[in-house]
Image 1 (tube, rainbow, N blue to C red):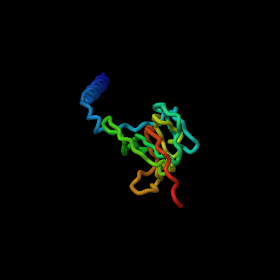
Image 2: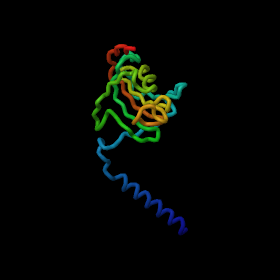
Image 3: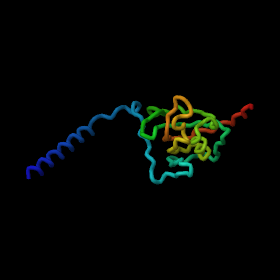
Image 4: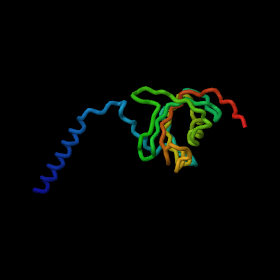
Length: 162
């Protein structure tokens, strides 16, 4: 009987501490990194290991080509959940424009599948990211998780001179 009472008291104490912790004010949104999206069971997984889930359908009808510039909002996490960077902070986004042909293999694969306005969560293997170890200096190693929103498709880049 004493043991049951002690267990009950400990459980009530834990609940009280949890409730007190829940009443703490949350940090300001601009100082919090967004939580890494976990790969859900309904994500589409391609043969090469790239996986994605549509978060928002696009409004466009044109798909980017490898020779296009693309403008996107994005957030990036390491596979362990470490937040790395985002083009959006504090509710404001500053889309980035890239030549698609110069991006990592995973972006070169997934972006041409998208249309303007579409937003995806994307899980990339090391081979589709920067590699492990990274092929470029100062880049993250290993698998990566992105949230990508295709904002615009720019004009094609001129062909590179040999």
